[in-house]
Length: 583
Image (cartoon, rainbow, N blue to C red; front, side, top):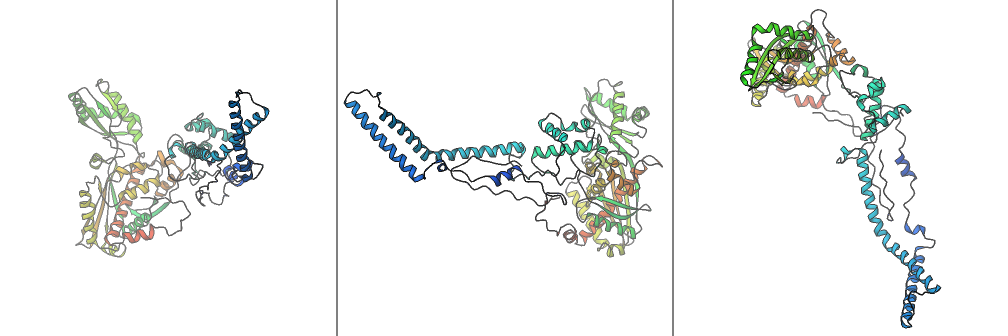
């Protein structure tokens, strides 16, 4: 903690109140940190001294002596000056008495100047010192916090670092050791994270004590999941199910901080289960990458398009592409032009991996091969956004990316009434006006659903998928239709671009691997390449179907607000706790 100590002033000023200390700053039952040096200074600091404390006599007697002395000596010297002028005596010739009078005059003048002027001057000195102290406080704490209106929390250091680690922390703060190189220098990922964490707290002046450090395998993320770690975020995992899908029962793990989400999805799973479950079909399985290349003319770019889309050349391109991996298999090549720029969209199967790296390596092989026939081709970028990755795009909505899945179920009218608390007619009408018409009015792109992204995000986080790919993976259209003379309802979700994998990336982390194991899709399939990832995609679609069914029923029955007030509002007293807000 950076303290503020101003210069001594003659007039004592009231110290500003200290910001309240959050009682929940400290983990579990650990004792609070020892008091800081500034706290000791506050306790041991003596009262501010005054100018009069230096006088041997009371102030009123001292003032009387110096006032009398000043005017008496001044009168005496003026009288002597007048006599010397009258008798033509040189002014610079002085006697011992006159010399003592001059010294007394100077001394009394200095005292009176100090008495009347020091408080006035000291007020300016104290004000300037206070401003400098405030400015030093902000600069030393962190230049990024200069405009922050709230005081910085105290950084509590619970356990002292070993002397060797303390030296490394200082080197990191001084810039002698780059923070990103700690793992390679130390050879201990956990120790590197601990040192980086301490350096971060000292640099920013802010505590991250609530961010856990222990209990995580930092070696498992080195070089593949996260750089420069300082801890990990805890997200609760709930289970929805059993989800009866294609004759199998799944307990679906969902990592979320949104209350009501798991409960709602679980209700949808129940309604589907008692009605015989759901069925799913994988329509397409292919990851894409689309580089952008440029030529001197549009005609030359069109020649590349004709070459790539010619069936006669596909086999040659496939052989070159497939060299990148034993699982990568080129499926199609589509090229579109924008003037003299060509955007080439390659699609390939990638086994049980999500496959972004795999398809990128294959594309790189093809581009190098094409330079033989098209030496004038200028490769602008390996990705030209025609892929399209982590962005809402019509090409994914129409052509698909990753796994294209359709999932359907028939819910009996009795189940709609008893479990979902609504009616078939109400669900069909709401779906038409909300998911279809409402989304069309909003100009939605692949958003013809109630909340598909809620379920997709929760399952993605639990199973180690790329959370950013929720953007295109959540593209979904929900359809509802009354069947059997209006007694039952047919519901389906069509999701053309679910991007998942069961190997690589975050799927190998312990927690995420456990969730994949719960679903029976951990790692690569031993039966057939890609089977586990395709099954995971169908589970995602099935969970989305359950979530859509339950939420739409809650809205149709007017229960949405009531359920959120019950399950998504904490009744715990959090007055003294650190709170977070979610949207």
